[in-house]
Image 1 (cartoon, one colour):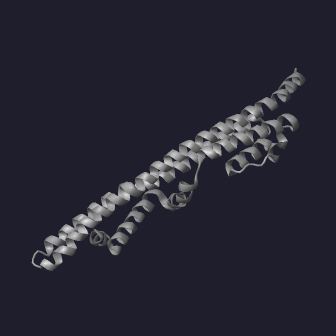
Image 2 (tube, helix red, strand yellow; image 1 turned 60 degrees about the vertical axis):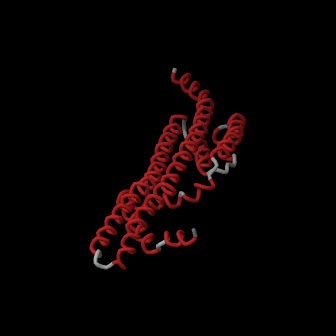
Image 3 (spheres, helix red, strand yellow; image 1 turned 90 degrees about the vertical axis):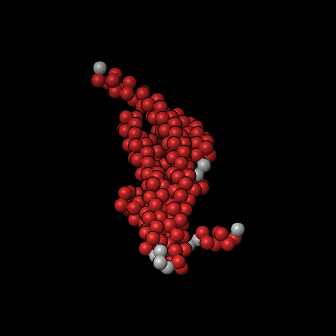
Length: 222
């Protein structure tokens, strides 16, 4: 069994496959999205959307209390652990009205969804490119094998190349890229869900606190 595993590992063939996949992905997605896709591997294991959601709900209770006691301008005093929530609370305290905050929320949600989709597409590109390059390597190996029919010693390496490239393509696509893309999609949906919930709660607080000011302005105009 160990001998079989040793023969399955060919550093040069694997390196060529990885280089080819990287070039295809760069051409399809660009350097920026590809870089974010690599950096996403860290949060892939550490991310916990349920924990972030619960922390956001606890923080929003404090934001609501501060808004009722001291007004929206003081809500940025509430400390939050998540960077997005920190920016949202700061924006809530700085916005002139609830409509401005609502516009900021919509832009942030759209931008984040777009970034998450771009990262997921990178890994989907890997899943698509790996089998295709594996098949290309198989064709090269078969051509080399048929070209060396007169030399039995050359048949083994050529056939190994043909089979290993297909094997590497299948493994990279189905055991690495596709699971990563699926996990990122799931994390993205959960993260966007709790962030939407949090910002909608903030928007409700902003509208509640701005309502007396709006009524006062209407009375002055009248």
